[in-house]
Image (cartoon, rainbow over all chains, first blue to last red; front, side):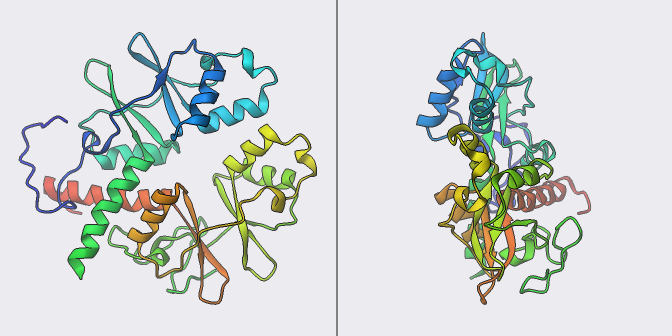
Length: 150
Length: 161
């Protein structure tokens, strides 16, 4: 998490300006664009998440969601012969660790997406921000507000 | 269609009234003008509806407006992938039946907890008479959160809210 020198006083969870770095998931699962689509299918089926990043040479080149995988399975006859790069969203929208939550949520709502890769200044991936991460942060913020009101 | 709290829906289904970041209960932010499916709709009809709509979740509602199930785009994609004769199916054959619901007075914090623990993004809202009165999705909660965060940031920057 980066600090920009602004004095972030914690008056309570709701009062602090929250940034992507505060809530993102740091463990990122990724495949290369040359991986078999079958690897993508297995990843989505066997693990507990809905998105993974496509990374080549340390750079993000795409993103695949479970909906992309399901669509691929439904529409493509010989999907076993395909590669990840044929099903991914190319050049996805990204955010930075110091992007504000309001801006990040705005991007997700605008583009109707649920996952934003988080990239550092040097372009390397340092995490992902999903709608689940945001929902968790929201729940924590309002739960403490509920408690204050009692 | 009006919710129990008397919140009216505009044409695009956004609830007016206390819909800012200070909303605390489901009824204040849920969408009340709903596109619904009947259990007897064919799967093909449902797919058409979904393809022409910005929504990803549809409530399946009986003639008496009680809830029969929920139908999401993921259900569609799964069925297309697995079911050989999907054209012959009806919505009731593909929808999710055992559905968790809330009522208009449910706290948003409770709704958020349910979505997170059950890993679902859509909660039908049922009135005390058992009839469907709205739908709450994770998008609605994120909308509220964005407004909350924007106002916090505006406060810190000294901007008028």
